[in-house]
Length: 579
Image: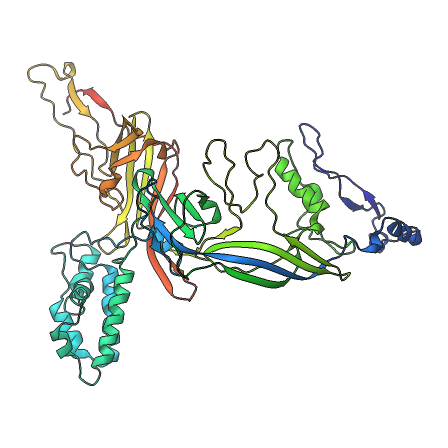
């Protein structure tokens, strides 16, 4: 086997173009790879002489970094603003940011849904009530538990035969209404509760009740932050501020908050950050080679991963990005090093300088440099992980954030099944937009599919004395299920809007879930419902904070739907009399 220059085998079947030809690979000709693996050289002295001639032994630019020191600063988030920022001159209602919090619960959290039956007793309330009963039972407060159950009984739903109604009737006399009890002790402990507690363990029981009350208020969403949901746009909008910069996320669709969700607002003044200042950071790290699964190895005699063959990567003439990635991996793979610098979450990390000592003992230093702007360009070239200004002023250069923005996002989010699912679809035949409720919360709080009402029988047509085959009846419109809610397009000063309407013969046109029941959801911007439609889900989520505590909330997730819909709605129809 001999090591020869062999161009890549990926050739376009259409044009015959070879995307790259800079990789040296072994080409076996004898079937025995032993000779090629030995990498024999006929004249090693000549090769050493050529290395000396080109100055490779001087080590001017070939030393490997050993000890690396990174000097940086961290500018923390000090405040956040729910919803879009008001117009210039109006007051900004900034909310103080607490270090260690997660951004998603603040932005997405909403108050818990009231039970459809008005009983105030959902599945969560049952769990909360039993949790307090267990704690008080361990403290020996059986009398207090009995008194609470007596004063705040579970309210049943009457003659309802649903599974949850049967569960509620079983709870009568066994547990209490957690919401009613929490409201009764919101300000202080009533006298009857104090008298029911044992004197020797009264302080411990009172502390346990206070802790339960705070936990119940937080988990039930009674203290949810102001809403960041932008009703007409079907998305979230919010802003965050550090000690020096303001960043805005105007089109956050829920799910995961990343650096790409934010735009820089260079002309927006950050709120007062009294007591906060950028934190200097110094890290002594070891440089490691940039690698990826299947990357080329840096040594000739080391076997590479057989599952990846960079020389066989196929690329069409228009796939320039793929060619560049493979070319960079083959040619300059050893020229990139990784310096891991841990940063606290929730702020901007700015690297001011990097110093390192290489294998030849030389000391190198690299200081912070502004990104060069090419002549005639309005902004610096695009770079990954760079937060820029979305809409610069005419003639002004595009603003660019100095540093890397690290949002205080959850590392992992646990999600439950969607408790509500609504799809907005365009119906070109009927010239309408439909909001279709597919899943809504049940009385227990669990998701339940929406059961549309049955199609009513057609209205009878009396032909009178005329033959039935010669009589035509008139229908104003055809039947549409009551979980299909129409939106009609209207032209206004703000552009084309979608306004909620109601079918003329709808038996029950009220929304069964929460999304469409909100008054602010009556009007939408038409551009927010494209041809593929929009799907909005309300999903229960849970994540751990930095200190290990849990945060539980219900957020909305906005994703594309599955194309246009067809309701079959028709107007001004005629039909023959039915028997």
